Every structure is written in C-alpha cells, then in structure tokens.
Image 1 (cartoon, rainbow, N blue to C red):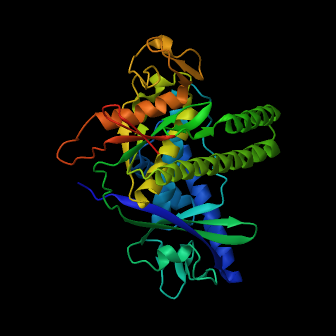
Image 2: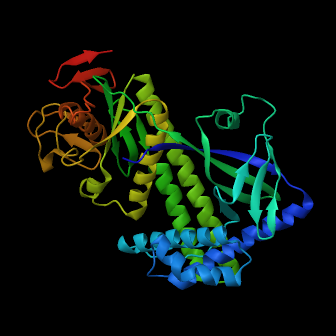
Image 3: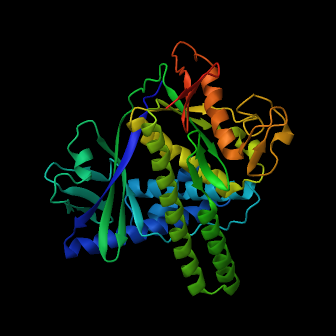
Length: 395
C-alpha cells in the first residue's frame, strides 16, 4: 500500500535582484503561453496528463522558451483545466475553452532547490536564479514550523507575481500517522445547500451568505459575457479568480470550525458522508455544490489528521429520512427542506441536524471494520453523548 501524506503550504516573499525579476516574469509569461498552447492541442477531448504531454510537448518546446520540465508541467496543467470544463459539461453547466491568465508557475523537485541558508534556486527560461526567502524575524512565524522540522519535506510549490512582488508558495509533506479511534467519540457532519455543514453537536455553518455571493458573481458574469469586449473578458477572468479565492477561504473557515467542534467534544473520529451517494440525498445539488463538498471534505481531512483525529466515510443513504430518535425511515418524515417531523414518534428537529446525528450513529453502530477496528462507541451531541444502544450520557 502506498504511503499517505499530509500536505501544507507556507507562503514566503522573495528578495529578487532586478536582473532576476525580468527572468522570473518572463518564465511566468512563457508558462502561461505554454498552458494555452497545450489547451489548443487537446481541447476538448484530452484530459489525461500523459496523453496531452505526448501530443503537445513538442509544440510547447518549439513555441516557448520553457525548459523541458516546465513544458511537461504546462501540458499537465492544461489537462487538468480541460478535465474541469468537461466535469462542468457533465453536470449540464456552460463552460468555455480554458484561458490561462493567472501569473503563476509551478515548481517541483527538478526545477527548484531549497537551501539551508534561506535561499532557493529556481529554473527560469534562461538558467537558474537564487533569491532569498524573506522570512519573519519572529521565530514563531508559521513558516518555521515546516522549515525547521525534519519530518516535513519540500514538494511541489508555485511562484506567483503580485503587486510587483514575487511570492513562493512552498509545498511541504510528511507521512501520515495513523489516528487511533478505539472506543472514541464520533462527530457526525451533514453537508447541504442551505447549511453547507451541520455537526451532530448542533453547530451550523450557513450557506446563505455564500449562495448570495455566488448569485451576485453569476449576475455580473452574465453581464460581462453579454458585453463581449476584450476588456470585459479580462475583467471576467479577474472576477473568476476572486470568486474562487473567496469560496476556498470560506471552506477553510468551515473546516476549522468543524475541527474545533471535534476537539471541544474530545472526538477521535469525524464521520462524513460518502460523496458518491450524496447526489441522491441532495438532488438539487449542482456541480458547484459537489465541488464545494469535495473541497470541504479534503480540508477537514487534512486538518483533522494533523490533530490525530480519524476521518471516516458513511453511506448517506436514508440519513435525511431516518429519525435519529426512534430509527423510523420514511420519505414523509422530511416535512420541508429545513424541518424533520417523524411520522412514527412525533419527534421534531432541524432536518440537517437530524441527518448529522444519523451519520454519526451509523458509524457508531456499524461495528469493527476488518482487523483494524475503528470502532467507537458513542456519538457526540450538543448536550452529551449517545451510545450504540441508545444510552444518553449528559455533559
């Protein structure tokens, strides 16, 4: 079995000599051109990285000044972008051929070397440059957590130009340590549209503000697309980047909140819905919602694993229809989108909160998993815990 890793990013500004600034700027521009050339070669059919590399590599090398490895990375980045467009098409959304405008270029082990003296060697279109990292004077700066810890090793990174400065997003990784979940407490998390996430401890992360912002972006995008000018197109690209940054930031905040709930309630497991069956439980979820759920799950997983908390998947089937009090399952239990009313026992609750409890209880009750027991015996609630046999223990 391949070893699994935790990944982190440390952003550092670079001290770049004037002569090197020109080289880095040109490298970024050439990489962007290389990505666009690869898209022209592969769109809309080719989404596999190695296939597009074999098709477009020679063109990228011939028509840009990129060195070999950056030409390869350009074809890979283009394949990812084409795959993203096809994913949107599969969900019935409109999407056009990718256009690369972001002033960013990736660096890997062949194109970047980090030195102990706080400098970094970067491949450019004309050899290498070696700027210094501008690190915090305070040794408690978060970058040192990864630079000074031998458990973390440098992995794929990226260079970005912004406001006349260059920033290196240094990627780090270290092997995952297996969290222990024996007889622990489970936090259940339900994903939704009105509430992006709700925990079994009754913490709600509303999606209303995010949905409102998304609607505003959508209206502005439609207006710019209708305008159709080159200036409008550039504005549209900037708007798309800003929208994505805001969405990612919001998802990071939600993931931090979920993790804090797990820590506050001494949970050893966070139980999340399997995304493969989520569309049946949330039939009105579109491609963006599913993208957000996948991204949120990834954020929760890597943040939780770093704290020694396991993240486990639960089949979401019937979690929205089952009463968390008596176990009765019926479509009529979901009296409205936001309310749950059990036909059998009369219990009432917020529908998302009821689903979050069901997710945790499913994990609690499913028993040992193969020889590696991830078992757990109680579900975290707002005011205590409940065991597999229904025994409530107040806080």
